[in-house]
Image (cartoon, rainbow, N blue to C red; front, side, top):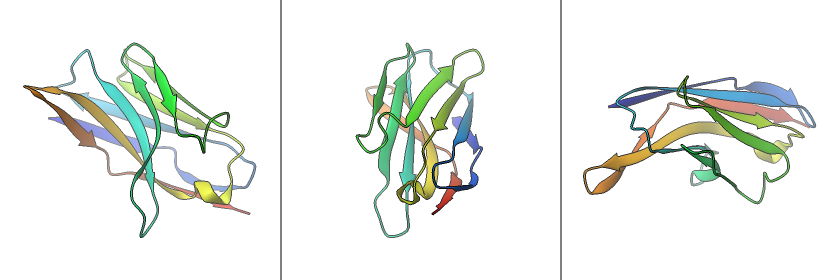
Length: 119
């Protein structure tokens, strides 16, 4: 099993910045992909950004140029630096780790951290 714990959420005014962290522990494979998702009430969870174990990143169009995902493999931690935040970024942010489990991929999730952006 893998455990994921997010931190860094909070309230910020529009135009501000926040940095989220996610620490992974447990049976983590060397090759994996970690990601940030976000969700607001009544909506589906949406992908924000991903990063592979060798550092390849991918972003949703809505956050490109504003958010940066990074990772520290020694600490089993990923980060999401969020800048120029706007009200549409208000959501619960969830950390995800995907790795191979037998013949299939297995997804693990954190419990989330809330980001509130006021205009």
